[in-house]
Image (tube, rainbow, N blue to C red):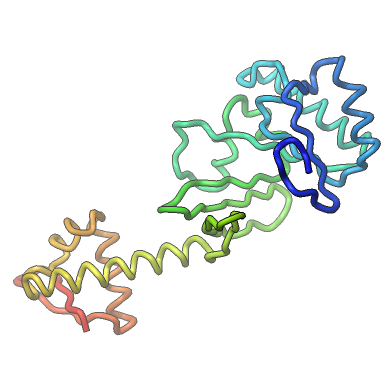
Length: 231
């Protein structure tokens, strides 16, 4: 057991000293001794902001921290993983751009060889983009956080694109059925379905066209407007 009541795990060591600063000379020797004792393959620093006393928005200062981390990896034959945050204003950009949405100087994005970008989805779902600078890109995936009585588990959901496509199709079918039950085919035109779904017209049209192609819905017309019917 440790100070936070976590069960000991084989080959996993924790320290919860919030005063550690890798850029502070007084911490260099204690940190070196700890790493020499544990001999880790991977060192996690959680969070990045807590392990240094420099300005994370200044490239020169962040380059100093990156050099220190490089030295740790070289001296101890380990990898370093930093737990960091994205800019609050960052959007759901493309994976290669997401690395630049890390909070602070772009020097950190330049230093990293890889990154896992976690984004909150609906409910307990989380989307993960894996960015690899020197390897074949990996498609983003989604997992679900499940609270148990004494533990929390992470359940694999699937590739993000496939997961959200399935969720959108299910929602589209449900709304179509409700709309048809309430007002018949006149209530199932693209403009009216857009309004109920809260989607843009092109997204709504593509999803219902995909459902029609998959023979999940029928297609019709109300005047000149496309309309769809539940099967």
